[in-house]
Image 1 (cartoon, helix red, strand yellow):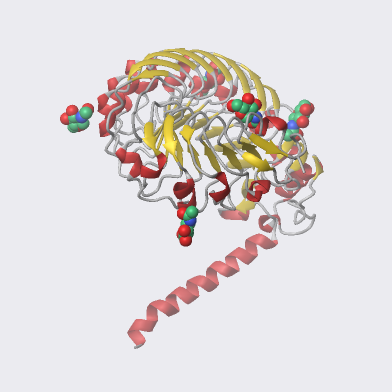
Image 2 (tube, rainbow, N blue to C red):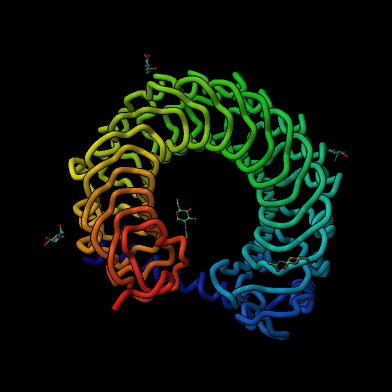
Length: 480
Ligand SMILES: *[C@@H]1O[C@H](CO)[C@@H](O)[C@H](O)[C@H]1NC(C)=O
Ligand SMILES: *[C@@H]1O[C@H](CO)[C@@H](O)[C@H](O)[C@H]1NC(C)=O
Ligand SMILES: *[C@@H]1O[C@H](CO)[C@@H](O)[C@H](O)[C@H]1NC(C)=O
Ligand SMILES: *[C@@H]1O[C@H](CO)[C@@H](O)[C@H](O)[C@H]1NC(C)=O
Ligand SMILES: *[C@@H]1O[C@H](CO)[C@@H](O)[C@H](O)[C@H]1NC(C)=O
């Protein structure tokens, strides 16, 4: 009894000690920290969400929202102010005041999703000797990334993602040899990936997506043995997937190269990336077949090969649960929906537009329909009816099946409440347009054999054109 309660007592004393210590620290606020933080606040012109409302002179700055203190003397070591991209009021507008440089012990600065912070790269960061983590993401900073960025050579993470930085990625980046994460996506950066990136030996994550970068994907990326995540999508990179990348097997988990101008075949070595979770090669000009080594990608959850020039045969994958798949707009003739898709217990997005699928939709019984959000089977030779399939989904948001041979009574289609987009244009659909379509954001039932009075909707004429005898607004009035 006594023995067993001893550790508890001990813990209680520790608890008291810590609590007192915390009180002692939080009571004080180093005057430099206080004036530095209040200087930052003064640079903020609008804070409609009151994110900085706890930042008041004479109060304990360690307990202000977003402020963390650690270590002896309770100096401020990080500030983390995070907005919400989905909220119209949760942002900050203004500039990042250089008085933050008085907060000398800062090791992390996280100003994320604040949207309306403007101005150039904050130069005072160069005068912060302890800074390790910089995340200035989804704001509205502009101008160049300083050419001497390499002087911040203690940095472990640098993210300037989602701003409007212009110009090249400075070559001095080669000096940031301790970087584990480099995220520069969503800016207006131009030029090639600098050769100095090869010096970033401990880089685990590289994202340069959504810029205007050009040139080849450098072969040396393969020498960065810790890399598990690469996102170069939405740029203008050209050339092939370099052979050097194969050295990143088996670690690589995330590879996005979509929306570039890449050419050549998909290399066999992709199949060596057995940990790969996400592969996006969409909207490039890849040719040839998909390597049979893809069978070894047993962990792939998200696979997007859409909008290339890929040919048959498509390998039979042995993935237990694909989550999202897009093979649309290549030169495939899949014939049917692959069994590894039909059997997936977790799939939420299936896009197989123009994949040469010939079947009756009624015959397709996926193992699990609960998670389906998106199904795109446009431009195939699919007959029969989607009524049963759609009725088995509960969360379906988009169903696209234009350009098939679907033939069913639309009046019997049970449109789920979740559905926002429905395209059945250019099929052989019969019957009436049900009133439930009024809840959709987009509808297209043009070029079918529909008939009867339209429900009152906001859809344009082209949503209904080319049917047998539809009438009522926006088409011509029904005959009495
Ligand atoms: C960013 O700044 C530009 C130019 O000053 C402005 O046009 C744009 O609306 C700003 N974006 C946001 C999200 O505030
Ligand atoms: C690289 O870092 C060294 C110190 O480690 C520094 O002397 C040099 O100026 C830096 N170079 C650049 C280009 O920033
Ligand atoms: C899959 O990996 C195994 C062992 O790593 C290898 O022997 C086999 O050839 C690979 N299969 C394909 C289709 O690449
Ligand atoms: C839709 O599903 C419900 C129950 O899940 C079932 O009762 C109904 O008959 C189905 N309707 C159609 C048209 O398949
Ligand atoms: C509906 O589809 C037809 C044929 O595919 C197309 O021409 C028309 O622009 C589409 N209308 C809407 C509103 O999507």
